[in-house]
Length: 359
Image (cartoon, rainbow, N blue to C red):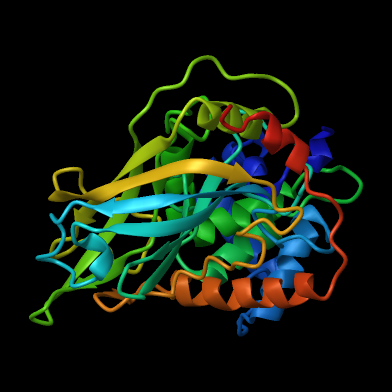
């Protein structure tokens, strides 16, 4: 992969961005106004799609972000420990069917897998009583932007120049100065431990939601899927992350505990760049088990799904965090666009998945 083909999310953690993030404020602030980088305006899903296209190009038939992925299936078994916080049926001692998708951040469907690639998982949980819960998680401890508008600005500021294949340092510095929460978040992200693959990775909601119990009490929460297995040395090749996942599933199911963190007074609810204190109460809400992978090609079960984080069961609600609603609109727009396009074969083909099936 050539340098200028690195997806947006990986570029955020390159020296070209991290070094500039420390530029003295007095230098960068003036550049923000000279460049008109932060002109007021309303962010729409169409505008956001255009910004994404500037980062990783347009790849018809694929998702505009998290374009490379593989479908998975399994179940979620509630532990019963979260029922005092949420009346959602999925948290009772029941098993809910799950359709999911492991993926890589970025709009390039054929990007080469790499250790520092930001990984994600989308899940659709179907509880026995007919309720549905969708979520989209990534393996970062915090998000690099505080609002959807700031995230759009971050992508624009770090867009690579067509000639140099590098971001304009002045625009990057201007953005970082005007949005100091971003360099602080990038420092946390840069320091995160990187695991060998999907199976031993932790995936987080990052955004805050509300759990609502039978009495109507609303409690702010965030959650993470914590792996219950370790992995050996990673493989190699352009698709090694997915190949390792498929091989692991061939040896048996993979599991993650859903650990819910309960927010307290003063915790930032609407800002995903800020982590919550590690001392907050945590609940083992249940166990996610994945036992099957399937290519998106040939009618994979996740192909037509949007992992809209506002599709929530009774007992879970959106909070003041602006991202879930913005993501819902962007996902819907992405689905509309790709549904009207011819989709080329995915990087993870049916033949690759068949090789890793149970004997």
